[in-house]
Image (cartoon, rainbow, N blue to C red; front, top):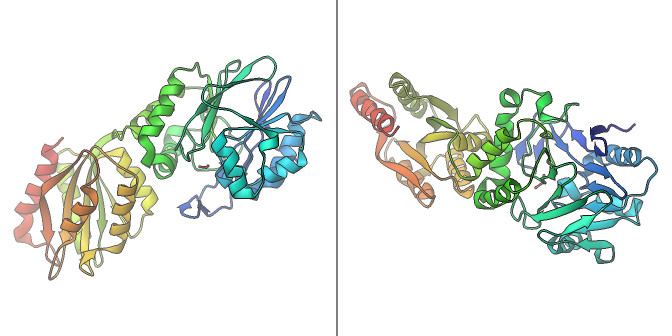
Length: 398
Ligand code: FEO
C-alpha cells in the first residue's frame, strides 16, 4: 500500500526508506538506512521531482500512482542522474509514456549513457535560470555542477517557496515516518550523519557548494526538499550555517582530533598521553583508532575539528595501512584550514611522519607543525618532557 506524506496542500513526499542497505555507494556503512526522496507537485500540471533507487521501486510507484489520484503525470524533473535517484527512471518512462522529462543537456546524455535510451523526443531541456510554467506558478532551474555530479541542478518553486535541492542538505538515515527535520532532535541525533554524508559525498567540492549557496541566498526559501533525509521548513538558517562552514572548510569546533594507528598499543599509548596533556591544558581532545572506526566517520570528524594529530606506526617502510588510507581519503576530499601535528613510531627506521607529511602537504592552508613526536617501539619515562612540549606546541596554536 502507498506510504505518502503531505508537505504542502499541493506537494507530497512520495519517496521511500531503505533500511536494509548495508553500504551506500558500496562504501559508506548506513546502519540506520537511508531515504530516497521524491516529491510530487500538483498544479494545473503535475510534476514529479526525481525517481528512486531500484531497491524501493515498488513502493515508490504505488506512492506516485496514489498521489496523482488518477491524473496524468505531465513532467518528471531529473535533478541528478546517480542511480540512487535514477534507477527507476526507465520504468517510470514506460509507465507514463506521455510524461515530459525536464532536464539539462548533460542529464539527457547521461540518460542514454546509463540506460541506453534516447529521451530527446520527450525532453524539455533547461539551462541556468530557465522557467517552466505549470499553472499557478513557474518553476525555475538552477545548475549546481559537482554537487555532486556535473549534471546536477536544483529547482525553485516561487509559489510555495520551496527549493528542491538534489543531494545538497541530505543526511544518512531512514526517515521512519518523520519527514521534517523539526520532527526529530536533528542536532543531537542526525547532525553527525549529516556531516558524514556531506563530507564524504561532496566534501571535495567546497567551491561548487559555495556557488550553490550563493544562488540559494538570492531566493526566498521557506522549505528545502533534498534527495535524502529530512525536509527543512523551520530553522533553515541552522543547516545553511553548517553548509557554509563545511563548504569553506571552516572548523565547527575548536579542539584536537587525534587519529592513531597502533599495532600493539604503543602508538596508542603515545596518542592517549598527548590527549590527556591537551585536556590538562584546557584543550578539547578526541581520539579515533583508525583500525576500529570507519574512515568515513573520521574524515567527517576531521571537518569538524580545528586541529588534527595523526599518529602512526611505520609499517613496511611506509605508513600503517589504515592510516595511509585515511590520509589519502582526507587529501582526496580537499580538507583545508587546519593545524596538524604528527606522531610516528618505528622500531628500527621510523619514517611514517615524513610520509604522512608528504600526503598532507599539497592541501591548502594546512599548518603542519615542524615538531614531531617520535616513539621508538614504546614511549619511555624520560620522554615525558618531550611529550609535554609536543602537547604545549599544539596548545599554543589555539
Ligand atoms: Fe544521492 Fe549523488 O546521489
